[in-house]
Structure formats: structure tokens, C-alpha cells
Image (cartoon, rainbow, N blue to C red; front, top):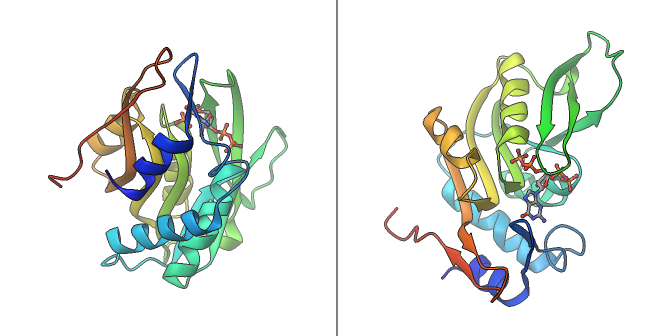
Length: 196
Ligand code: G4P
């Protein structure tokens, strides 16, 4: 079991509806020593990639992506969620549907901050259905940038996102993959990634 799986076992709470609450250390209160360790682990896994920018989406991705960008010594750019329909031509735009919140957002990144020269590492806290990641990939590709890889802190392996992104041929690394959660006992089953 890796450091993150241990922490999820210790402090993660399994909620009804297959929701894993990790707000005591990851996406509300943040344990900075843990986030630094997560960032170092992404650096180790993507060390051979010529990353020029880390790309994430507000809100929870930002705090993690900051530390990852520091590891790579590159800027971090976050996509903003926007309800506005009047988005001018200075923005890259993608549509993101949230199954959890049952709503649709446009996400936007200014054309000033992403270009065809960029080699992007996409970072996010959760991967469930993959809509957020697909939106970020779409934005990077609209800019003509190269997606060097995608780093996720917690993947919910029983939802389709991970399979879809891997099948598209992207290099996706998830530090913990939850394959099952038991609401009754609170037990969390992680995918064995030791063979990789
Ligand atoms: P997707 O992006 O992979 O398609 O996921 P989905 O629409 O299902 O998830 C919507 C939001 O809920 C995302 O955050 C995602 O990170 C979060 N989420 C999904 N499953 C879980 C879970 O089991 N536990 C927790 N804690 N969060 C989960 P978001 O709407 O982008 O919100 P935020 O980043 O602004 O917080």
C-alpha cells in the first residue's frame, strides 16, 4: 500500500452513492506535507516528459497543481468554470458535464497562457467519469499544445473515466485507484498497481 492509500484508509470516509470524502486532508483542509509528497510522486512518474506547463481546473485541482508545477519549475494554469455564454475569442472553451452535480459548465483558459509550443501535464484531484479531464484535454488540443500526461490523485476505478482516457492513448497516472467501496463497513479496495 502506498503513502496515499494508507492515508485514504486512515482518514477517508465512504459515503452513500459511492462518494469518498477526503476533505480532511485533500480537498477542503489540505495536508501540505502530503500534497508535497504527491507532487514529488508525480515528478517521479513524469520525470522524462519535457513539461512546460501544468494545467488543472478550479477549485480543488489548484492546490495540488501548484506543488506539482513547483516540482517541474513551470507555471500552473487553471481552467475557470464559467456560466457565461458571452465568451470572447480570446479564450479556449470546452463544455464539461458533471454527473455528480448534474450540471454543465463551460471551462475557459485565456489564449495568452497556452500555445502550440506548450507541453502540458494535466493534474486533478479526482477522476470519476472523466468529463473534467476530457475538457482539459480539449482545451490543450485547441491550443495546439501537446498533452504529455495526466496525473490524478484518486481515480474511482469503477467509473468509466480512467478507461476512456487510457483507451484514447494518453499516459494517465493515478496515485490511488479505488476499485470498490463498502458503505456498510467503510472498507476501501485499491487496485494493485505494483506490477506497473
Ligand atoms: P468527472 O469530472 O470525472 O466527470 O467527475 P464527476 O463529474 O462525476 O465529478 C464532479 C465533481 O465531483 C468533481 O469535482 C469531482 O472531482 C468530484 N468527485 C467525483 N467523485 C468524488 C468522490 O467520490 N469524492 C469527492 N470528494 N469528490 C468527487 P468538481 O465539481 O470539479 O468540484 P471542485 O473541484 O470544484 O471541488
